[in-house]
Length: 443
Image 1: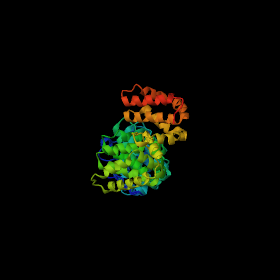
Image 2: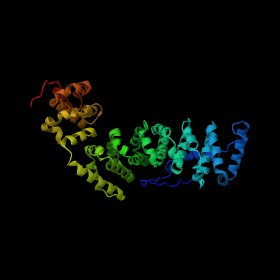
Image 3: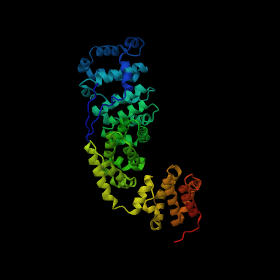
Image 4: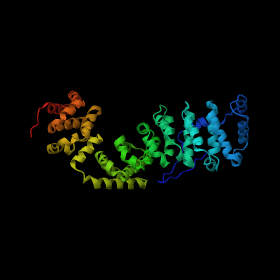
């Protein structure tokens, strides 16, 4: 069945809900189509009524004619069966029939729009709880198709659907993750669903983890970032996503190693949205992560897609306009928050530390905490050296900060670096410890 293209307000064109590159779902569907359901046996066993059996047989003779004559009645029969039958093999067959014959029917939207949204959507939401991958994925796919094509989607609370996605995006089966991302990509074409997904506990963490794990699968990587792009049209998401999920360093890493041009395109389209909708929240971390340098490097390439060049030019212009208005401390703070420390001028300037050391204590020691996390969790000898140096300079010129550095464990971590295999890390750690132990600093 060919899935129709759906256009939404930002010009997002939606591909098939499950694309052809992954046959995991379709291969199982082909096997199910070949099986017949013993409806008469179910009726004799009391699982279905005689009236339901009559409707089923009438539908099977000529599905299109049945839907034309009494579409609501037949669809309701199958929805009721999905709600009451427990056997997985029977549910398989009805799900395949529903997609093939009902959603595949040319005038299905007119029929489905007349149904109670709670029955229509609620049926497939309920099936997401079944302990069966095929039932869950097929139900999620049908939910997506219905959400794209029927008016009742906005009346249904998607919280359970997005909680399901949060689980499937970290599923151990890579096929399940792939199909889930494809379905999510389609669902997020519905503007009303973007913020609810973003706010679902664990959902964004799962999506970002999936993107990190798909370096060897450019199509999955593209679709995962596409989901973030769709959400970046929401102002609240554009304002929060860097602070909440450190998305800019991830995008930069992916863009540097991307094989497919479309991956680069969707990354910089997302960054452009973040700049347009939330410049105040994003410009400093973008500059701190050296995004301007990357844009300049990528601009030198020849791109077949002109949108990439246009977006790169826009981002370069915006960042260049703002870099001159940033104070030296803003640049320093941006670099620390990015986690990508280097021996840039502020670190080595005694004047900088005399003037700004106390500012590292602002916002509940935000920058000191950042440096502490880098020392605790970073493997880069450059980052460790610079971070240890900065803590030393901080306590030298802001002795009141020594207590916090000791209490939050950073002092202990720096002392451990004194036995690091790298000589520069050892040296910077030694200097920092000496300053931590000193009673005062000399002007």
